Image 1 (cartoon, rainbow, N blue to C red):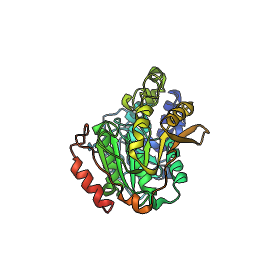
Image 2: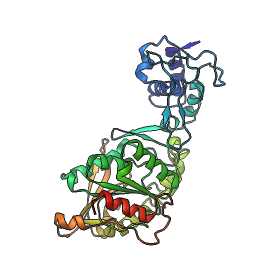
Image 3: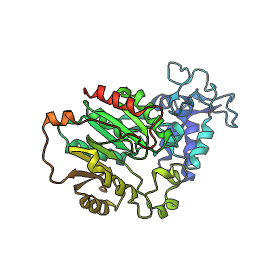
Image 4: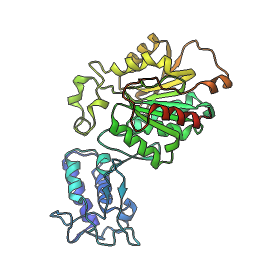
Length: 365
């Protein structure tokens, strides 16, 4: 029977040999996930036994405490029963995926977030899947930029997230702008389903709708805040990305066309009709792209400013329309969320009339 400390050392050695950064930390997270316990419980007693007679079909005898993905597409982690110390009271024999198999997946450079099915963003616990980009800390810069640009949080009533993925940007923004209702769009039905589940799990299901559509093809304007982390990797650079990205994250969410700017051209051409008067847009940009995106923005009639991420790289492009007069609060309240009749690819699970009705109800129209 192996012990917690031994398993951690063995796992960290395997990960280190495979070139995985922070191997000890990742081994700890994988073992905790496999056993269905917290890392704190795992480290409480390094001499605690794990496994025994394996029910997971592995040679190591290390098996899970029932942690599994429940098949709903959310990646929600469920755990088996635990004893008073937080370690599985059945000796880790509840079945499911073994620790060694999780290590095998990480050694193959599958992202840790896809293995565990979870990722934290803006202190929100989100389900992730291979249908979307994995939320990254760099993208939190967009939320910081939005909060700086709009100090009066109560005035934001409508938020649009283009290419919503997991819904991380929209849900983080809804957390910070409590009077707002949000719309997230994505071309992937699997992504919109995942984002909808995340909103429900976080108690925001009644404050957001998610549409499977081509960018904002199904929407008209009136948004106080527009967010987007569009695909911005030049097509020719995709094969050279780190394997965690190139092998496991969706090309649709990465490929920005020959120069990486294809999505920005579309967004900027459509942004004037999407933004409310005095509305703000915040777009994520790739390293070295801020100058080119700013030029496109100015040509489209916007004033552009950037905010750097923690590494000092310009990451968030803040856009406001040049020369617009300020509307009164009363006029802003009259701005409505409408769906363009015959919009492309509307999500069948949330018809246009329902979205408009829900949005009108939430926004008090």
